[in-house]
Amino acid sequence: MLRDYARLVTFACGLLVGVQVPGFVDQYAKRVSAHYIEAQRSFSGFRATADQFFHGSVAALIAHHRSSGEPVFIDEAKTIQGLQDRLVALEAEHAALQGSLLRQIFHVALASDREILSETTAAYSYTVPLAPAAMICGVTIGFGFALLVEALLLGALRLLGLPRRRSLQNAGHRGTHRV
Image (cartoon, rainbow, N blue to C red; front, side):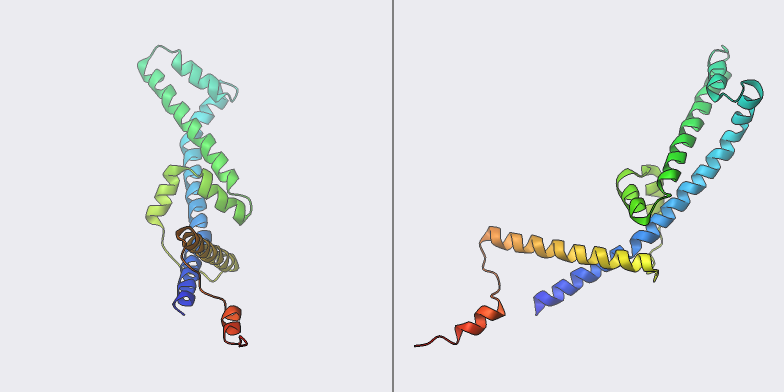
C-alpha cells in the first residue's frame, strides 16, 4: 500500500513539473523576442549608416572605423561588431523557437542562450495552466518520471540482492499445495 502511494506521489510531482514546461518555454521565447527587438533598435543607426555610406555593408563600416586611426572610432568598431554578433545570435535563437512545442522544449533544454535562460529562471512565475499542451506535457513527464523512479528502485533492489514483493498469483498458489 505504501508503495502505491509512493507511485502516486512520484507521478504527481512529475505532473506538476511537467505542466510548467510549456509556460517556461513561452516565457523564454518572449524574452528572446524582446531582446531581439531591442538589439534591432540598437543596431538600426549603424545599419542606416552602412546603407548610406557603404552600400549596406556593415562589415565595410566596421573596417572603416578600425582603419580610421582615431581611438574613438576604433573603439566604436568593437561596439558595432558586438551589437551585430548579438543581433545574429538572437535572430538564430528566435528562429529556433518557431517550431513545434517539442522542438522548442529540446532547444531550451539543450541549446538555449544561457544568459536569457538565467533571466527567465529568475523571473519565472509558477502557474498550473489548463491548456492542452500543459496537460499533455504534465502527464507525459509525470508518467516518465514515475517509470524512471520505479526502474531505479527495482534496479537498486536487484543490485542489493533484496527480495522483491511476491506477486499475488504466487501468493495465491502457496496455500493450495496438496499433501
